[in-house]
Image 1 (tube, rainbow, N blue to C red):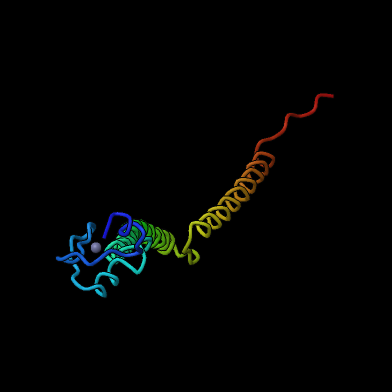
Image 2 (cartoon, protein in one colour; image 1 turned 45 degrees about the vertical axis):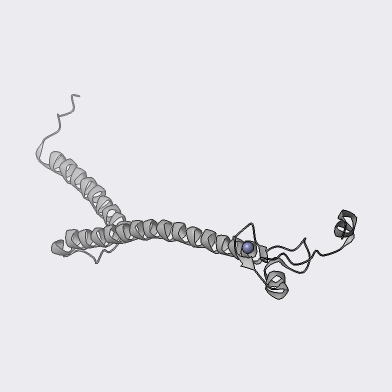
Length: 148
Ligand SMILES: [Zn+2]
């Protein structure tokens, strides 16, 4: 068989020691085993390359999942801290209002409503006090007699 016969042929004779994959180094001694690994035509991808690609994809997915878990752990920890603070705040608000026999207050908004109502009562009381002062002055302090 000359050089021209080799180039025209679609396949070449089986090497004495089989075919060795230059990707993974494995040697295949039968045509069937070699075809299974390398594919039926030269443009097909070797089984070890396909497997490595799939494993790389799985590894990348695993790393992405690990990153996501780490982010979610931080997020979860922050939410737990916020929940703890909210519980403490509610407890503080209840503790502040309960001893004074006031209304049941659970939220900052309810606390502001109570303070607004207290402010309104204070303003009304100050007006009442001003009226009383005016009455006292009118009653007990004589006005100057008019000079005619
Ligand atoms: Zn291989």
